[in-house]
Image 1 (cartoon, rainbow, N blue to C red):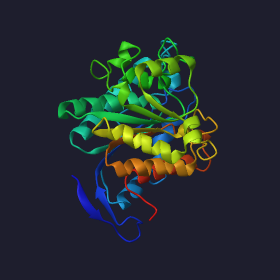
Image 2: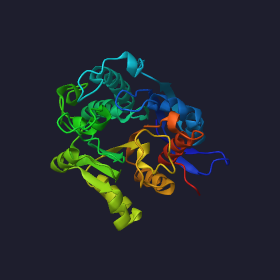
Image 3: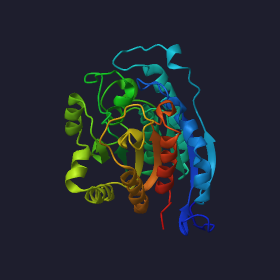
Image 4: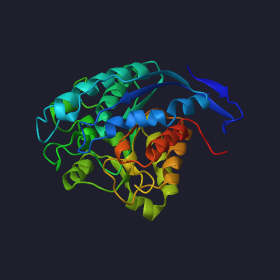
Length: 320
């Protein structure tokens, strides 16, 4: 249910649109090399996510974790070019069910990772729901990495680096046909922000697929405000709704140290928050996920706290 909601004076927003939100926790780290991101959802929860969103006037329909996964050490690696394929597919099939359920009810799924392989299930669930509703959707992928490798190009064999390509129809059938047969999103409706670490093979495939990419070099040359305008124009010109997939490694490790694949030279704190605010103002964002919070590497839970602030800005919080 969507309605106008007036907030108590303790919150700095005077008027927002209240939403029914499904918080879906995915404590999965099979897709990455470094352990710890499976504890990310708990860290974000402990940083006060639910209370923050309720203070903004939103209703939390439920908080659910659809998976129960054993530690990596208890599972078989399997294909060295697509490690832990079976448990990752199983977990993402379960996630897709929950995301489709929320999206079909015109409610907001907010998915917490875990590593970025969970975008496979998120996009599958959204695609299934939107196909029935005849809704065209795009994805803003905020990440230092392209995650557009296949088994032919991957240097690591980690599926979190193959998840976007698979969702766009490239790669192993087990991934491209996850939940239902065929690609889940048109690559021409994917926009990247924050790229700064691409593998040679995935760079070629991204260009062939036709994704739109704004690297950190683009931000340095053109300025962040100019890039934001291009991002908003990109989505308004081609889709009805937007999914935001936010990897905490898109932010410079100076501000977000608790992430598995930290790369220097990323977004700063203000840029990340402004990006969320600008996307919120479009009114097009109907789902989001925040991934790769790794408490093992964090400092006093500051990365998880930042994840909560990013979610708040995306869902209506402003400074004045």
